[in-house]
Image 1: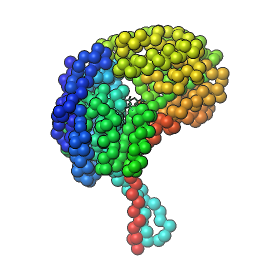
Image 2: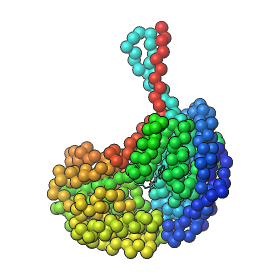
Image 3: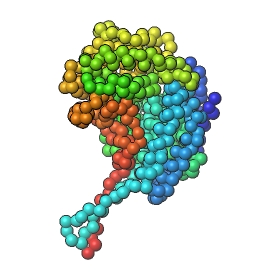
Image 4: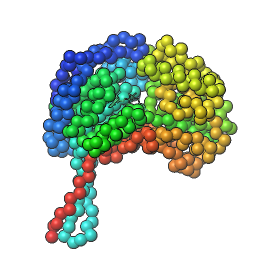
Length: 477
Ligand code: NAD
């Protein structure tokens, strides 16, 4: 079994135990994994102070040097892949093969931003007056508060830490209470590569509202980067206004998965399996609403049900398992509520059955006959539920896809090139997968519009969220 990282707060390069601790349990069977320090206000303040003290030195380091440390961190993650993956599966529940994929994906953000640290270019602007030189440089915004959810405990953190450190910011991270161990394992690796004390601080806490509020409210914090629910994101943005802190928000989604009449149906089914079932459906980019042209709905549904029926449900650590447990009882209760509402309003169950609520293992379910009045059309399901509605034509599919206040990602299947561009451009979301069920990659800007948030992570644009542009006008003659 995977060895545990130190289960304390990581502040100023030291592991700091607290008198209060909280339990981290295996979602599969509630077995106790660890008792973790519940960072109190004094520890959070100390972490912010440490990040503030470390900031000037880290900012002054040449970008390529910061990048070298990030590259080493990526290597350490990959070398420890198995141990990190098992830890993630134990606290999050996801299938081990998905945890391995997550560790690789998470490490790829360190590699990517190791390169970007060398390329934080400024610009020179042609002046309109003689004797003037106009230049623009990038400066790190300052110590950053990073708040992350439980569903991708490594990747959501490395996507932020990689960009922040590359830009020259120091950080204090507060991971989700359900999955603090993955974050602490990252801090342990950071120690071994020689990232200076105070550059990375991790403050696990049982009460996200209290600890997150204290952290984000600290005067020395100049930037807040949050990944989580829309509801909490709105609270953070309101609070950040009081001190005009920079804010990036990666929030909830309600992704449409559109299959048009001329789609390659086998490709659409393969894409749907990835877009829907990664992490047992508990992903912000999970396909939430399947919108299928009526002319191909029967074929798509039949083929999809055949693939879904082959998924193996069970304990994530079992190497054959595809679908691990949902993360907690509240998640099971939510899926149950959404299914009861949909079935009560006339949805037809084509495969599976609603959970009885006695276990966190929820077998995949396929529903047809979905209507916009059903709650699962409006809310993130965050579970292994496929909800299918038919569309009359392209225009109807676009209208249905955009019928949501969210706008993180949309998926589109069609073989017609002009249609691919036309529909992708009409979709109201920050990202679109065209004949592609998995859009996330460190090279591309990840992020949403509308209630899915603001700011971009990954890609060369990821650095923007952690830097200020400084313009310097110099009289040279
Ligand atoms: P959540 O909003 O409940 O919690 C996220 C984090 O915020 C946790 O660390 C939590 O402790 C902390 N928190 C809670 N209340 C807080 C407060 N008042 N002030 C400061 N911090 C607070 O979300 P969750 O249930 O952990 O995660 C699931 C949600 O995250 C889903 O909505 C999902 O779509 C979203 N998500 C979005 C992305 C994205 O990139 N857009 C990625 C993953 C997850």
